[in-house]
Image: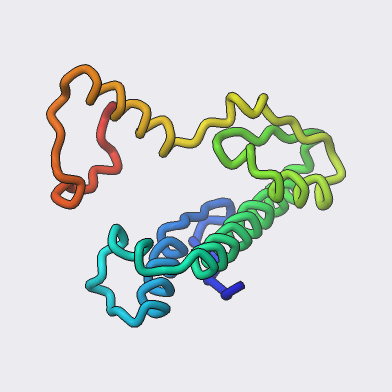
Length: 150
């Protein structure tokens, strides 16, 4: 696997994967011999399966490591008697394994069917809107609107 940078932010419990996602994009561009002008939408077709798997494994490793590290910081400070992990990340087996290995307290998770990923929820909403006649656009012409109301 390749080494990717760990997510860093100034807050003790804060983290963001935007820098990690950019590092993945730049790594992919480097692997295929292209510069930063190559779109992230064009990149997957230029990478072979082994390269994709290597990048994905590296991303998963750093993301999991980051979350576990932040959970451990909070655990050391607050000394909880149990912890609840939710959201899409709660379905990750490796995260569950690492947390169980490092935390000496019970960890509660929702049923896997309730560990939905935000991206999957947004895609499902888009599908329902398309089925119901919402206007569709070329995906390459869309603007990013991270705070858009659903």
